[in-house]
Image 1 (cartoon, one colour):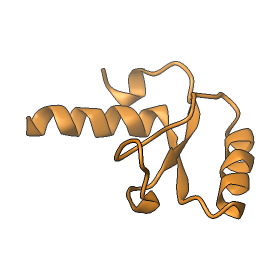
Image 2 (image 1 turned 135 degrees about the vertical axis):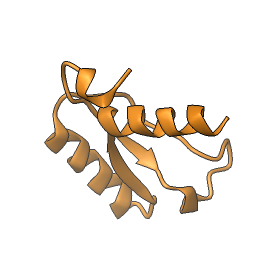
Image 3 (image 1 turned 90 degrees about the vertical axis):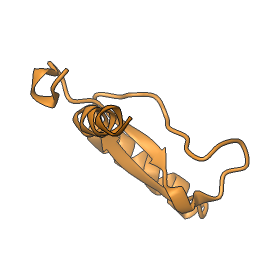
Image 4 (image 1 turned 180 degrees about the vertical axis):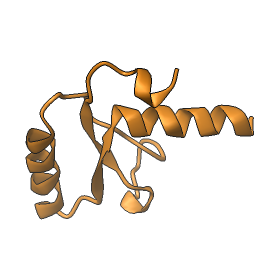
Length: 71
């Protein structure tokens, strides 16, 4: 799948590598179509001292494609 094949851009909150999570090395929230909503969620988590960013499904596809090529 290529990023340009996606029909709708979706967004999610992702914990950064520096987040020092106890359960795993990375964690993500559910996909949502409203980027502004995800930006607000990320801002709330940042105000609670969580290290988070946002990611689109197009970015996720590109990252997964890179991982598959490396393996």
